[in-house]
Length: 251
Image (cartoon, rainbow, N blue to C red; front, side, top):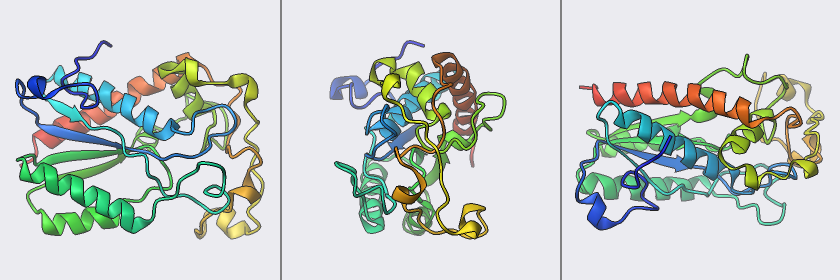
């Protein structure tokens, strides 16, 4: 799909923006962290931005104009991950402050609908969104974790597949194959965290990445293909575009 620049804020300009109306803002949010040995540090932000652009293009077919914001790259990290070189951990209060500033600015400019398109499993926005709903009751703010919108069964084979595995690698191969160093990829083997009840998800605690993964991946990427990524992205974009349509019809 070819895309206009006027709904990609990093690439458009003020003169072009003034020529269009905008119904919904899409804010991609990712992280900066290792993704096994073969994917870029900025994978979460890159993929989320590209999917957001695809959604904006699809929504335009139904006369819905979106603006895709530059991706926020500050994500929440786990022990054993944030201590890796150049992995950046963002505190909860930092993320909330960033989101509040963005919503405050957009609200003051007259915008009333926004999607946070999240690409990082460590990010959790619900408490911030609840607070913002109190401060801006006329501002609709929806959070979408793109990788959970469509079940992976029938698209990918590997289990588990949580981080830099078959799903993420296939999607990156679809959008930016030049950024994937498959010959360097580790096997993404997962070991026990040391707590069986946490491993089976009876309870939750931050996983120490040094304990559960040697290469920082969770899931084997070796079966990844661009074709798998393209097919999955299409299903994800269709699902999120339906959400955008529903948001526009919201009373």
